[in-house]
Image (tube, rainbow, N blue to C red):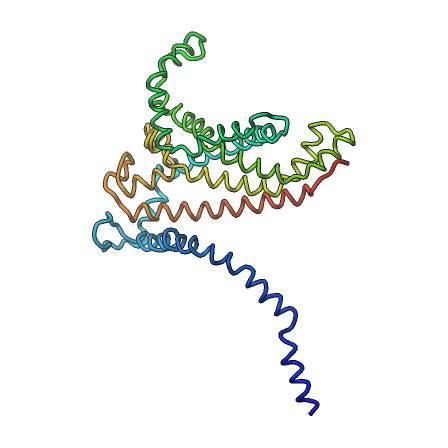
Length: 329
């Protein structure tokens, strides 16, 4: 009788509190998974599956027509690794990122501090103005820049000649010494709005009470920025840096429209290199399309980016741990 009563008590008592909490949490997050489901389906269909499928093409020489049949094993990988143009394009990609990321982040943070001020009038207008280039197609920007250089390039050259800064006219997009610099400048301006919005969002999470307490303690703008703004932005700053680096490594459309990787491969980046391999073009090794070579180059580049991203995250986290959260003292 006693055992039967215990069993009845257990049956009526329901699940343990921990189990009940987990079930309630799952019910709470159920709609979150429902909302995420369409995005996950699109990600699997248009990102994950193409990556897996393209890995199989790396072992074939294939022009994209019919079924691949010319099996070459690791020959495509060997050709890419020994191709000097691939490593040159990889170097151009890193140079582009090395200039664009730090310049963009510094300018975006400085402008975000100004636009976040409550004393600034028409702040919303200025935010929209600086974000407009982001929503403009890179192809359109490339065409406009080409027209500007074509129409005003000689005027700029005449001005620089009068100032004795140059000794002869420069073909800004046709000179290997200046073409990549033009792309870097346009790239900084084009994607500047992303980092500006990220920093603005981070600044708006900092409580105003901290700044008021700092002013009462007699801290000036520089000390307030160093001991309040920077520590409070450190976590979101790591994410901004990672997103900025990944974004610059995806540079393609601007280069393709402005120079198509020329002149003489001076602006060839990895994505345009892969494009020329897959569809033919200015690349000396891509007179005929070769999906296998392009897939091998994409796979190698993807592995390099994953390794670089992991190193970047580890380094940034270790630096954040060493510095700590800081303080006004």
